[in-house]
Length: 292
Image 1: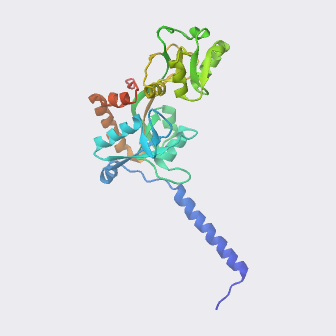
Image 2 (image 1 turned 90 degrees about the vertical axis):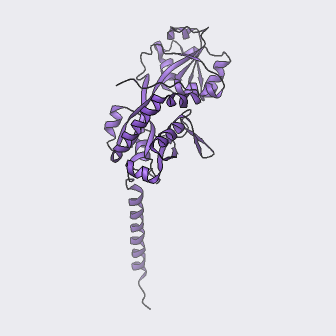
Image 3 (image 1 turned 60 degrees about the vertical axis):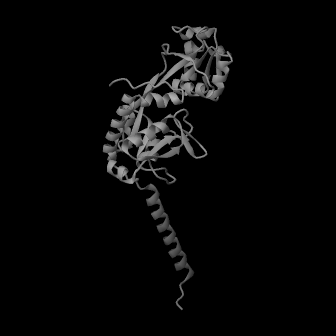
């Protein structure tokens, strides 16, 4: 029997281990294969990436995806003649991270990508930074607004009113920063903070606050869960970097034909009124993007 010195065996094991890790690293870091329209149609499945914990647009219960974007995604898949399959993932630190993980490369820890990602800001700078993805197909206008008690807050009210009336806001948001810094802190004593949107709606419905400020769709979703609704106003908010933004879709840049097909499907859903119905199911007012 041939025998080898222990040093040679140790070196061989080290080399083999290093080679194995190199192969695994290559597999985990390799770009995911893009699926153009023909491949999606042939597979009979459209893989749709949506956010977890993004109610009323997307969340999951018992592994089942729910929300506006989920119903919207199912409608898009139907228009393409395929079934919808959802990939539900938490938000990363930046949207750029989400595009990489969900569209063109996959998570750093391994995992598949979607054919399309929903609720992506159609921001020009974001698109310029992420050449690997095609961002477009705007389908909804997000806005910052105030839910109000009409008897306490007139529709033409300004933020000066909240020097005497209480306004609720989710802690740590852009709206919170605006209220806390308005006229160098003039509203601080009348800002009621909450950690969960549902709590803010509860306080509003009890009359503890005269208004509730934040992203309108999110607030509307919480009102819907509570079996209630509210009027909204959008007074001037000088000092907020962005009071509205448009969300759309993203696909791998090698799947542009899929993006075109999705765009056509969105137009059909809007024209038929189905988009409005999907949003209304979750208590959200459908606000179409402004014409470009």
